[in-house]
Length: 272
Image 1 (tube, rainbow, N blue to C red):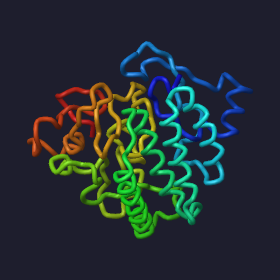
Image 2: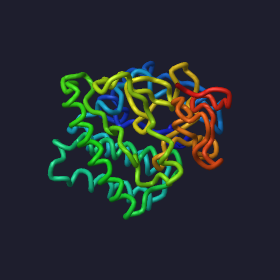
Image 3: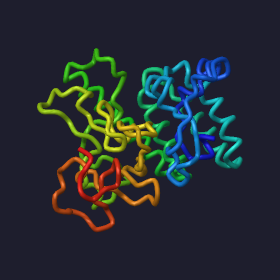
Image 4: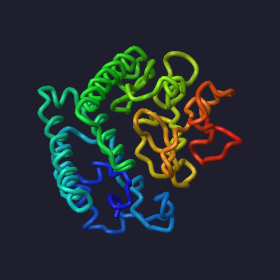
């Protein structure tokens, strides 16, 4: 029911070990209401409870998890969508440096799958390759940043998206002034723990890599990451990132970009 509810399904939930755990110990599956915005009474699996985070997936687990993902997809999508994801998987697994570049591959794959389940849309070929190249650059810069800050030995395996100008090729000229979907602590050498996700309100990751279905307070997330922006799940309206980081007291963009809290939707305060 996760897929039918248009909820992002972490690949770590689809590994052989996780599926075996679900079958042998059904009590590990925690059901919760309020995670589906257009049907808050629907009870679905809480993917943030009891299973590894998706960014911990190992290269050797990718193919087995993807086989199960494609089987699942056949139950909720037409053949053309399934074929698109097969082609997407083949593109990723055919990379000569698959193991060495797995952080790039996983970050891009998470983004593509999340976009589909949030909006039921996929990138066309040109936009797909453009975004792939952007993610490659982002992860390379992230590795350099991590090495320079002395955090290469930390427990975080990677930080897919470092701060930089023109964060995404899909952001409009107005939206690009919204800033970045995270904040850093004081000083240039801040660790990933100082990053704030304005979708779930947790530290340690950025909004464009958030897979949580609940906020840090246990309420359903009302926003998602799509096309390089934070958008409301209910109507896909763009939410101002800078406002939610306390950096946009006066709108510097058109009125289509909303000044509302990305965690609860209130107009009276921001997320940070």
